[in-house]
Amino acid sequence: QTQLEESGGGLVQPGGSLRLSCAASGFTFSTYCMGWFRQAPGMEREGVAAITTGGDSTYYADSVKGRFTISRDNAKNTLYLQMSSLKPEDTAMYSCTTFWASSPRTPCETMFRSRAFDYWGRGTQVTVSS
Image (tube, rainbow, N blue to C red):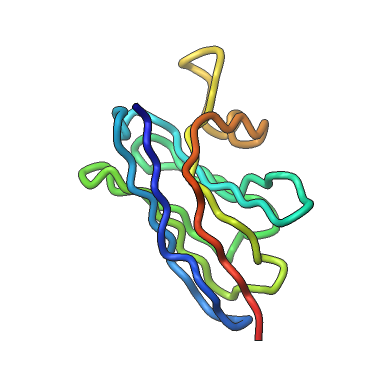
């Protein structure tokens, strides 16, 4: 079955950096648009970033654009999120996710912007605080 396991979270000072990883198994990782979302207590899930199957295109929320970079290694079935210039408002549980679509031709960006999260892991906590 589909399994996603995130790691790399922690406590970091404002302006610091973290690299999150997501190990995927149970499905053909290289054929899926993948992404990250975050959720802070009392808040809705926010799509953070997404990446196409081959990694040639990436998409970001306006709140993280220019600070976060999503990437993938299909040979290792692993998704990454490099986070830099972190702010206290980035504090949240971060989860990697697959997306749901009614058609296999649905663009990755469409699935990301519509927050069509399908399967996700337990998440890794990121806390930005001095």
